Length: 116
Image (tube, rainbow, N blue to C red; front, side, top):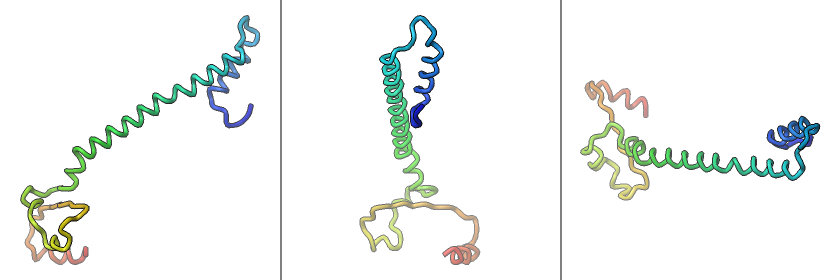
């Protein structure tokens, strides 16, 4: 049997061999029809996978992405101007993220400087 043929072709060949002694063996036309049917039956699966990927992307862009762009920041923090905003008044990407650290600035500053 030539390489590159699908599993369905192998199964059909086995069925043809098993039924060669039957009263109604498979004909070449029926084998071709079965191969075409198995080839076209993959289309609904592909469409379903593409639709699922589209739904996941839409859900991400609708709910997860806005949360990620404002992670931890309040409305007031996201709306206020930050140092350096005047350098690029119309940025292509804008995200405001914040965390709260319960410590004095003198304790945090060396850590921030070390991070760069």
